[in-house]
Image 1 (tube, rainbow, N blue to C red):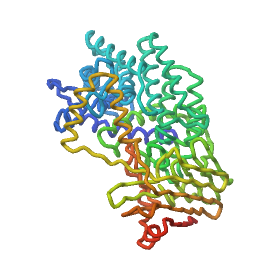
Image 2: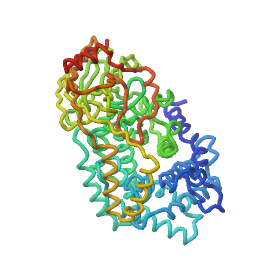
Image 3: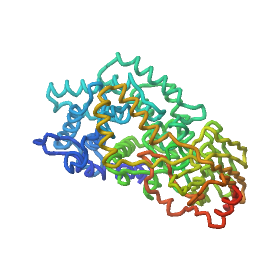
Image 4: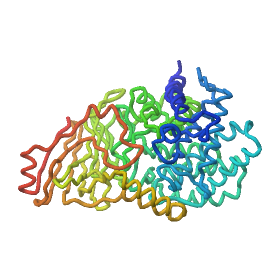
Length: 555
């Protein structure tokens, strides 16, 4: 078996095994009024009051299974599968808003790239595959839906910068233009492209809210690589090249990826773009090879790990990757942790610092309060020593706080073997709905969300409240890191107002704190790292003096 065939099988197995799960979420009864709806909680359990459109994204994975002769693929060219793809596609026409948008989380959301961009991407693949079984009326209905969605993507954006969403707006726009020869959309593509490029940093990363997120950066690589299959674009190709060069630092020796170093704390590695770009950029294949081994070990994020809302995103990622697996050269570039020499890196704009010293590899996000991952490396892989998210705790009044945040007032500096960051603590938002709040929210969206601009600003407000808005707490962490061949020394100086009543304080735990629906999946590395609760003696010293210094050595 060649390396390519082995990796191809890994991808295929992770994707094709979840097609039955997707079909189980779909109403497959042609007599049902919800025929084609893939939101099982809506059409069967009746546990929610509207169908989340993103469930229909599963038709993309189903289309790939229908079109591609994967070994043992029972769905290939099956007439029933074609009918289910058609049903899923036509169901979308019944839930689209007049402005071309779709709802994912709540009625009248009118989401932009998520979900409308993702859904249009799925439509652009599903529509040609079953066009032959559409009636002229159904064909026109579907075409109208797709062009409305494309125009919505081109004429709008969203509050809060998510670069991967901008890439996912560009991808289906380009596909739709080519599919229908809709050249009237070209000016809108140009506008959205210009916006996207403003979020791309010269260092190679693209903005996700307020910093770099390796998981979503790999998604941006994939979306751009797929776009480049549709049209040549040197500027976007250069963004993709720089991005895949940047992501190499987050492909860890223990086969995990990204995580709590990122602004959105995501672990997922989107492999398809790395396969598409790998022939021209072998470094992409070095990353893909290592992550393929990780998928076998249960690391990173694969469809079976995810809840119903999101597993449909990952199915096509793996099926695309299997279909388009790249030929490997005899030798691939080394990843940063595999270097035979001591190395260091510092991306000041992103706040990412680290390197390899002796048997150790470390990556630190100074812009996020000094969150760090440290590994002991061997020839082929390594083990994690710590995954440290600074300090987090809870006050006597129930307020939760953390230093693990991208605070615009943080201060950091670094050179080859030493780095320092000073970070304020901020509150952690943990709001949930109760029946009264949910009723008020639904009523408000029904009353106001029908208007596009109002819905736009309401979604921005919700995003700020849940994800971006924080208050400061009078606690500061100053972290000093010294990294040499014998190990790493971390000195944490915690200062707190003496009037503050702290109930519990954790140091060095792997602790995601941000509201991001695509984060917080279990990773095997969690079993091997831990922080600790400050002892009663340490807490008393902090209370009495307002300062506590803790030094740890990893060696």
